Length: 208
Image: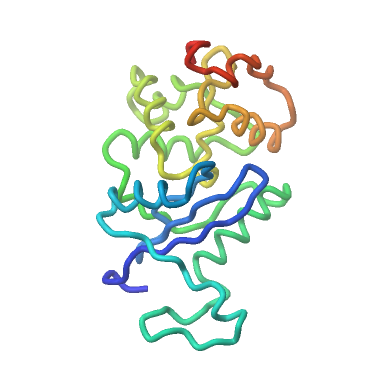
């Protein structure tokens, strides 16, 4: 894949729904689960990258077909293969850290600092927004940490699900606190009190 190539994407199934993985020549630029129409997520990413991601031809090798001239040669060790394998290992409980090249072009300023600090939260542990702000070098920026976690292009591989409120409650997770619950339970078991049913069904009404 060269810098002139368009970004490519794959959709990978997981226990929390389909995961969209978009890659540029510099690495994975976004990786997150989605529950709406794929085209809507691709349009959002296209606006951010100013280029429409195209499907990665993952089936060419399986079919034994030669790749088109403008397609990269199939490679079992490519970044997509690494990403999907590592995600499967994570959900199977066999992986605690991800080793993938990330393209941070969609992340700027303090958001990058906050997300880098989030990456240091150990598997099976949590940290509050305030603790992450301190680790990122701006102690009073807990609210900005919340914004960084809410707008991150990277889920799971940058474990924003490990960031919780100061009182230990889950907080929001892109409108899907049940996914955050699943990921925390996967890593450490059901130790954090479950969010109220009303908070899941109507987060705005519950004030979260």
